Length: 370
Image (cartoon, rainbow, N blue to C red; front, side):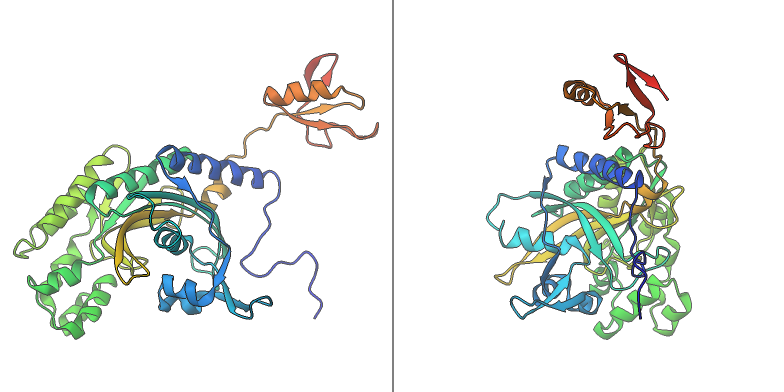
C-alpha cells in the first residue's frame, strides 16, 4: 500500500508556525521556573535497552513500550514512555554520589504505544521536577508549590490540586481496619471505583466511610478525621493539612483519599493537577521510592506535567516581524534583532512583506506598519 507523503501515523502530528513557537515559549517559561527553584536540568536518552527501561518502570509497563532491535548491538531497545523513570535511573547510577536532596528537572517527548482518552495523542511532551532523597512533608510542599508556579508561568489560571493517599488501604489494613492479605488489592480496587456494593461483598464495610471523604479539602478532611482508625490516620491528615496550607489562596484543593489511578507506584502522598478550561488532568505527582543497584531504595518526591493542552489553547499573540528590503545593511538587521524584532530579509526584488507575514517594513530608518 502506498502511504500518502503528508500522512502521519495515528496519534502523531506536526506543529506548524506559529504554534511550534508557542510550544517553545510555553515550555521555556515552565522550565525557567524549575531552574530558578534549584532544579538542574537533565536530558535522558530517547531510547534505552528494553530490559533496563522495564526494570526501572516496573515490569507491568513492559507491554506499553514500543520496542525494536538495535542493528548495532543486536539487543532490544525501547522508546521511552515516561521520563520520570529515566531520571530515577540517572539519580541512582551516574549521580548516585551527588549530595542529597538532589533536584533534577527534565523536558522532552515521550511515546505511548496506544493513546489514552480523552486525548488521542501518542507522542506527548512531558516536563517535570524530581527531588531525590527526601519524601518529607517539606519536600511535598515544595514540589506542589513549584508545580503551581510552573503552570502559572505558562498562563494557567484557576488551578485545582486533588490530593490522594496511595498507601491508605495498606496502612489501615495493618491494624486499624484489619484485612486478610489476599483481600487488600480487591478492597483497594473497589475503593478506587467508588463501589460501595463491592466493598460489602468483600466484607470490608469498615472502609465504606472513606468513600464519603471526598470533595473540597476542608470538608473532606474532616470526614477523614472522623473515621475511627485508632490514630492511624492522624499523621497523614496532619501532613495533608500542612501541604494544603502552603497553597491556600493560590489553588483550589480537593481530596480523594482512595484514588489510585496513576498512583500505582506512589507511596504516602499523591496529587493530580486540573485547571478550568482543560478537559484532562495537566499533571500529577507525589512521593515514591527509587530502587538502587545495591538492592536498597531511595525516597523521592516529584511531579510530571503534560503541557500540550496548554500549547493548543495558548494565545499565539502578535509577533513583530519587520521586512528588510534588498540591500539593507547587515548592521541594521543586527540592531533591530537586538531591540527585539524578528527580521525577514528580502532575497530578491519580488519578495513581499505582507506575503511573508511581516507586520512592519524598514523604510528610511523607520519601522513602518504594513
